[in-house]
Length: 142
Image 1: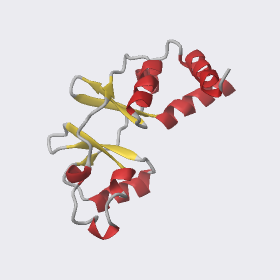
Image 2: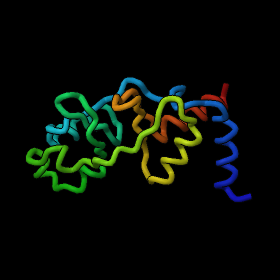
Image 3: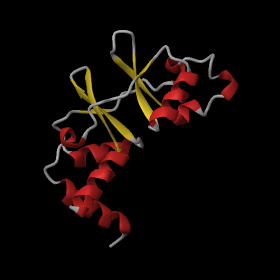
């Protein structure tokens, strides 16, 4: 049995019946679309997350931006370029009631490291690969 199928079997066993709402982070740190990339860098430095939901003035989620987007720009331009100029506007989302297994499959298919958790058009949480792995490890040691 190859490693990937072993890991998949382990994850399926750990997350059987677990929903996204059970493990999502509900205190979501966002960045305004009118912030500069320098401000994004400050956020990354402070919280050590690699990606952030982007919101507009009405607090509506309009995109996602990551450290990869930041480092595709010359550092000397960080104060001139706004988050909305570099963010991805393609929102890849799940709902709190969705299964964690389905959410992980979606992350893999989309090649992303985090999912926005939405109820309608309201951002209610975020889930990253690392939060999923933290949950696996906690379940294995308890």
